[in-house]
Length: 156
Image (tube, rainbow, N blue to C red; front, top):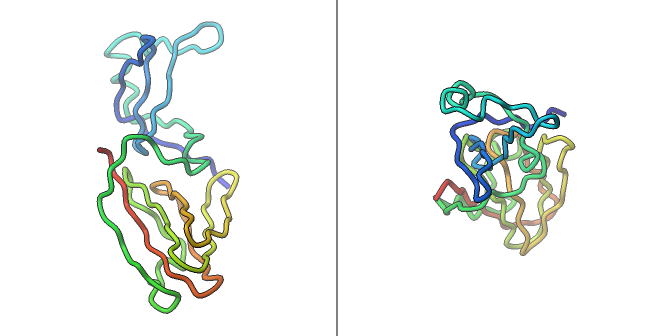
C-alpha cells in the first residue's frame, strides 16, 4: 500500500512561532527548521515557503483516517439500505480533494476498506462511523441488512 501524500497549500505560524504547512487534505503539519535534526531553511523566508507550495508531504493523519479539526458538514448522501446502496460505493472510488467523507451506519453493519498504509479494513456497526480521507481509494462490502449514509465535510 502507498502512503497518503498531500500537497502543501499554504502556511501559518503556530503559537510557538513555528511554521505549519497547510495540506490539501485539510490537516496541518509542522515544517520546523531545527538543525541538526530538521533541516528546512526554506521555511525561514516568504520566498522559500512560496517555492514549496505544491510539494508533497506524507500525512500520517490521513494514513489513520483521522478527521481534521475545524470542518463543517456540507451535505449528506443517503440514507441507503442494502438494496439501494449505489453500485459505485461497492467498487473502489474516491472522495473529492479537500472533502472528507464520514460513513455513518444507522442499522446493521457494513465493511469498509481504505487503501491507506497500513490498509484500514473495518466493520462499522450501527451507531458507529468511519472517516474517509479525500483522494484515498475505498469500497464498501455489505455484511448484513444495513442502513447507512455518508456525510461530506469541508473546511469551515
